[in-house]
Length: 82
Image (cartoon, rainbow, N blue to C red; front, side, top):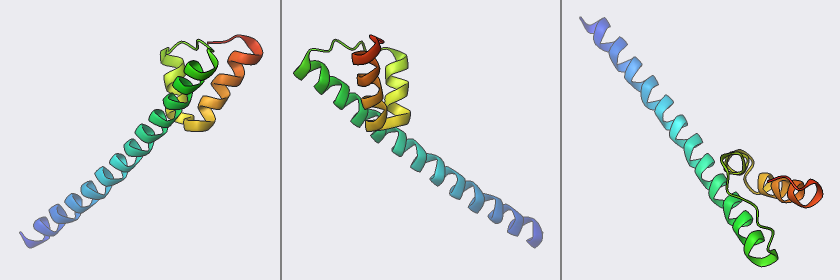
């Protein structure tokens, strides 16, 4: 009986650690996407680039953050993408 309870406590500790790391990754993704989209918004507003807010642009900004936003802006300026 005690062995089962120790195993259950161990599993719960591992679950809490896993949930912590998942939320930490989600927080990083949210901060990256907000910063990236703010840069895209500022570029559209200040320079009139007219970059559309498609799911691809949002995904690039979410994964890449500021670097992703700069890549989207450069692709728009150089090749007319987005």
